[in-house]
Image (tube, rainbow, N blue to C red):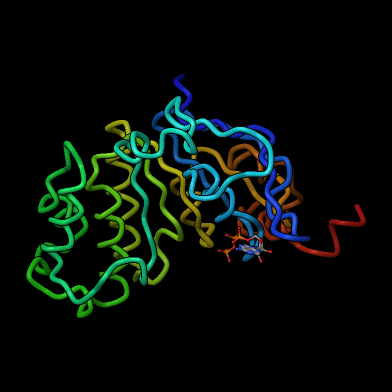
Length: 242
Ligand SMILES: Nc1ncnc2c1ncn2[C@@H]1O[C@H](COP(=O)(O)OP(=O)(O)OP(=O)(O)O)[C@@H](O)[C@H]1O
């Protein structure tokens, strides 16, 4: 299978904090990869190094065969990123924000169809600032998909969404995956990870403490449920003495 993202021996420190220490993983086309871990575990730092918005201290990153530091512009033609609130201006209509985003790309997706897919078709003429938290979150996923990317980065994918909206987002992503999209996501919801991810990495204090499938993670733990296993991997004291 074709490798889309390859991370080798990635290290990044901030002053005295080792945010990411010797991380290795690869993601194949059509795979959904979950980068997991508690607040401060090193997920965002890893993602920023992959996107080239932060420079690692050592190690290498390849995305779609490119070096993100050297080929930033070419890379962003093919890579979508879901940003959080605060990144976008919100005194603008949904349609205008989509239009502006689409204008940045050579072959953008049809944003009206995407808005429909994420149940936002009625909001086309609304101001972004007037959307609910969950509607904004879905709009940010749509914006990440407008480039018609080969790979998309989704950060805290469904935080703030109601139960139905989460399920709808999972279904839409599964459809996009079937069409060839590769997805790297972060999530603090283990049911979501179980439903979507082909492979996961659990980080703790910048280190890789588990890399494999959800099934393997459960099997290598004393528990039957993934959430219990996840907590076992990430728990502070008990495991450190083992
Ligand atoms: N710009 C920075 N300067 C100094 N320290 C930083 C900086 N960015 C992150 N850190 C530290 O690096 C570590 C990893 O942070 P990072 O944001 O990568 O974690 P995260 O897993 O994405 O957390 P969250 O789930 O809260 O988003 C933390 O200890 C954090 O305090």
